[in-house]
Length: 193
Image (cartoon, rainbow, N blue to C red; front, side, top):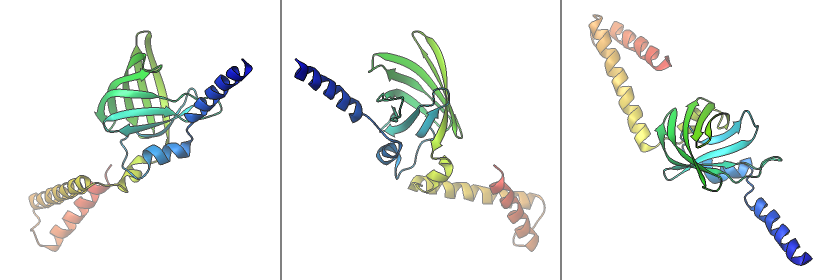
């Protein structure tokens, strides 16, 4: 009887460690060498202090709690989440898929607010991004061909717009003053956030 109890306890301990995830493992497995959506990264819950990784597989976002001294849960999955840039909406499965919560996630820089509503009311959770610390700079390393095309289109639109403005102001195309005008306007457009 003691052997069976020992095997069961050992099995539970090993299964708990099988789902343990360190921050570096989370980066290596889910975030490394690719462009990230604004919602992806390593986040810390400001109220609870626990850390999670949010990553995308195919068209699904998944969150896993990163192993810490106080937390050993394996994680939860966002289902049917859609959105881009700063706002994401969908649902979340928790408690081994037994409970479905509606979720709205809003990302502003390195802060994220999750609004959760379910059968027992609502909850607001605030998170702070740990990694990458600057997602825009991080993503510039992983520009896709589509990103490069869009950047070229945007640059062309800016150049045409400043040339048009300088012409309207009365500067003759090809003149030194026209070149100065376009350069000044172009510089202002690309440096304004």
